[in-house]
Image: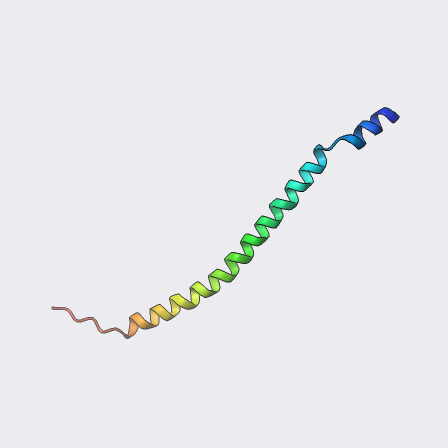
Length: 61
């Protein structure tokens, strides 16, 4: 029984899995934060562009 517990304590596969889960969660969180901050600015700029285009007079021949 002690040999099995010692082997289990030496096993590192689970620790590597936890590392990958933490890294993946950090990358996903960073991506969500970037999309959130960029989308606000993009919406502001698109609203300004829409207002500018609405003010333009287009003449047809």
